[in-house]
Length: 569
Image (cartoon, rainbow, N blue to C red; front, top):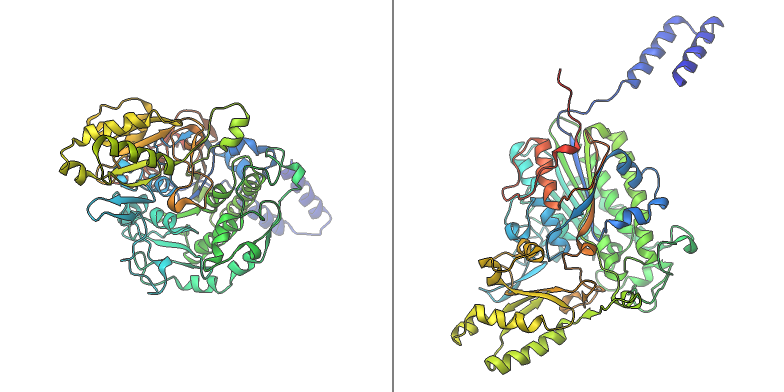
């Protein structure tokens, strides 16, 4: 229709002698040149992975009517949407989920079993990404001591580096250092995260000898101060958040007793040495991370040649929202409406700068979150909080009565219990019998659905769907002796270092394990898929598209049916 109108207009202009035939030919040539379809290359020139902490799959449908046309709706309506994308594991800490995506394997292979684990040899806690021995770019900066050494498997980024002989540009961005480190792989690219004390983006000497020069200029803009001096106001008027409970509901933790409803003045909430950490608990963390991602694409000339590049953008501020608010809060809804806008902005930039036919984008989450037990109880469910400090106290008394005095439990964290194996051995007890005695006791406790010992996992005597998921979380060298699976709807109260978050999200139930996966751009089909997919499928899928070796411990299945196949000539 519009083409014919243009032709009629040009014919009129010739007749009226306002333009010459030669000018018309030039106009038509230019018009046809731009009208030619843009065919995707054999391999994508740029792969962009957007990973959002705390992204429950149902957030897509719940807020659908309020999303813009150029964000979630655009990539779902034009891309491939996996609607049954599930983490098949017990421990759903964010760092574990990032490692799953990065390596295409579960913790049983990549070794990132939790944020921290107990080292039996040294009898000390080991962080899966932070190390005091790590050389920093500035010896006084502890935020520069992160790496991915504890990740035992290769990452997709590593395989890309090896295949292209380090010619690919690889950038991993996240406000939280562990996410940026784990996604970047083993010294394979630029890993950038936020220094919460200065508001600057930084890295460690593990990844680079120095920060990119362009990053200095970006840091000098002092965007962190601009964001810190803003108020987090609701995107819509509060009465329009009909998918959520009322603002300042009784179940949310908020930013303290006096900061539990809109608007949030960040300058008043943010206190202490790491004052910029508050950005990672608000939508400003999305904006700041996306700003840096766009700058990285420009400055690193990503997607500009035939050698494929890789950009990971991890939105770790979703974890901050999960820590202070629940899935039915106005703040959670507002966060995802704003995420939709930022994704729309990033996609628009990529389309104009690189071309969507040259870019493969995937969007996924790390984990979900249960509804507050108090809320569920009012709906008639028999649920409550699981208090580990009380259970350990009761269990300690039980073990004392059965086995005598002794520090039988060395460490507890996230439904995992490390036993004093040396004391058990010296006392002449069987480790298997000791574990069985504890699990028999624990399953009598309210809120515990299953308890299993590590030896049962190793000898295969524990069977069933739950135990198969637990096997994925179990690493023989690093994992605990006892694992606890809570009953549906039950959640673990904060314990030790987790006091800042509402409750943990470790279970294989769907409210924790079900997350979205959307592919968009390049040769991606317009399709909805209901069959099961897992985060470990992502890395081998991209490896196939880029014609790389899969990560060396890959357990996933390539999702090859999501791209358009070329017609035989």
